Length: 106
Image 1 (tube, rainbow, N blue to C red):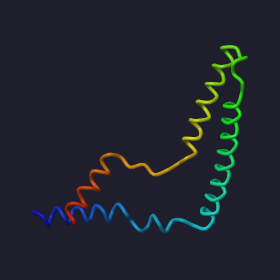
Image 2 (image 1 turned 180 degrees about the horizontal axis):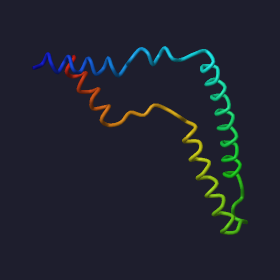
Image 3 (image 1 turned 45 degrees about the horizontal axis):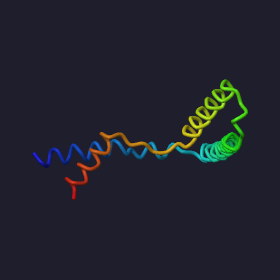
Image 4 (image 1 turned 45 degrees about the vertical axis):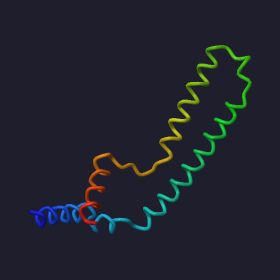
């Protein structure tokens, strides 16, 4: 029974990390991603500058509607910055599966 589950897990892992996916990357797409990363970094810099500018403003003289507009702008800038960050996200199920596989194999 243990051999069958071990074989099923290894075939699942082998099918998950299929080598054909890694061979599809070309030099053009690599340069394109580098260009997009530099533009994303420039966008992030401009958004951070705008956030600093808003934080340094004297908001005591503003009307309530202007303050509300600034709050909305700050929230939208933070939302866009979160989207630009990217990152690798693991679901809880994937994390549990990895831990179980490590416990079984080690």
